[in-house]
Length: 313
Length: 256
Image (cartoon, rainbow over all chains, first blue to last red):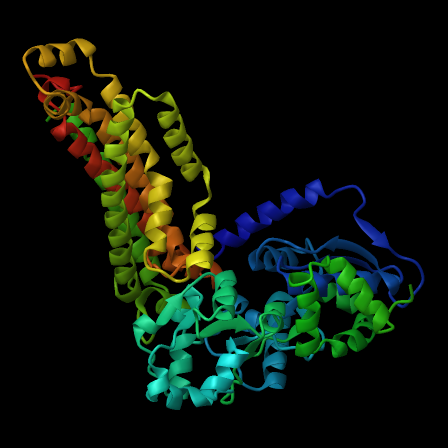
C-alpha cells in the first residue's frame, strides 16, 4: 500500500507535465552550467515557491537550461517525480527526508550529523544527491503572541512546566495540527522531553492556517507554527526557543538526481553562496513578502537575487 | 428467503470483507508513525481498532448523530412549513438559502465560522447541518405535495382538523420519500464529518489527515475505509428502516 499514493501523484504530475509542453526549457547561454538541462520542481507552499524561483532564475543566469516545474501539489508529487526522474532537482528538507521519505522515527539532534545521515542514505538507496544545506531551519515551534509572552514571562519551552503548574497556567490552550497531536516526534514526545502534562481539553486540533490566525488573536495561547513562516513576523508571534533541542532540524538543501550532479559537479560550487545567505530570519522575511504583502514569489526571488548581487538586472 | 432479503445481505458482507482486509493489512505495520497514528503514542502494535482509531470512530458517530438529530429537527418542520405557505417567495428564498448551504464547500464554511467566532464547539455542527439539511427539507416538501388531494379532501370531509390531516394522513403517506431524504442526509453527514478535524472536532478526519500529512498510506487507508464502511452501513440501516417504517400499503417489492 505504501506505493499507491506516489503512483496517483505521479499520474497527476504526468498530466500536468503534458499540459505544460511547448516551451519547456529556457535559459541557457554562457556560464559555468552551460549545457545542463535541469527540470526544477518545488512543493506548493510559499517558501518552496520562493526557494524554487530563486534556484530557477539563478541557475538560468549561470547558463543552465531550466524547466520551471515549481508549485507541484503535495510533497508526494515532488518526491515521486524526482525518484522517477520527471524532475531532477528541488529544494528538500533534511527532517522531511529523514522521517517521511526514509521512514525513520527519530530525528538526529545534531544539524551536521542529520544532514550527513540523510545524504548518505538517500544516495545509497535512491541515487539522490544532496548538496550543502542552507542555514535556515524550517522546523516546528510553539509560538505565542509577543505581548502575551511578556505578560506570562515565557521565552522558551523549558519555561512551560513551571508556567502550567502556576495559577497563570489555568486557561492556556495549545493548538496543533491533528497529526502533530499523536506523533512520537510531535506533542507526546515534546511533553516527555520537557516533563509536561498538558490536559487533553487544553489541546485543540486545527487546520494549519487557522492556527496562525487563532494564535494571532489569542484564542490559542500557543500555536504550532513553522519557524520560517512569514506570519510569525506578520502576526507578531514569538516562537518559543526549543532549549532541549526536541524538534527535528529541517534545513533546506538542494536535492538532485545523482546523474545530474555527476555530470555537472560545478552545481555545488555555484549554488553554495546562494544557499549560505538563506537564514531562518531571511527566509521569514521573504515568506512575509509573499504572505503578508502579496508580492508574487518569482518577483520576490528576482529582487532578492539582484539585491544580494547574484544576478545583474 | 426472498431474493430481496438475500440482496440485503450483500452490503454487510462487503463491509465486513473491507474491514477485515484493512485490519489484517494494517495490523502488520510496524512503522512507528503508523502505530502511533492508529493506536496512540507508546503503543506497540498497529491493531487498527485500538486507541486512536476507536476514539475517532466514537467521535465521528457522535458528530453524525447530533448533526442528524438537528437535521431532522430543522429539515422536517421546514419542509412542512413550505407546503403550508401560500406565499411562493418564502419557499423560493428558503430553497435558495439551503441550496447555497449545500453548494458551499464545508471546509470553507467551517474555517470561516472559526475565524469569525473563534474555537466554539458548535461550529462543526452548524457547518455540517447547513450542508446536509437540504435533502430532508426538500423530500418532506415533495412528499407532502405528492399526497393525493382527494385523500386530504376526504379526511377534511370526515371532520379532521388541519393538524389531524397532517399528522394522520399526509405525513404517514409522505414517510417513504422523507426517509429517502434522511438517508441521503446521513450519508452526506458521515462523509463531511471527516472535515471536522480541521476545527478541533476530531473524528475519522483526524486519522485520514494524519495519513495524508505524514505520508503513511495504511493510516490514510484505515481512516478512509472506516468512513466509507460507516456511510455504507448507515445507508443500509436507513434502507431497512425505510422499508419497515413505511405504511404497509405503500411498500414496494413485497408480496403479501
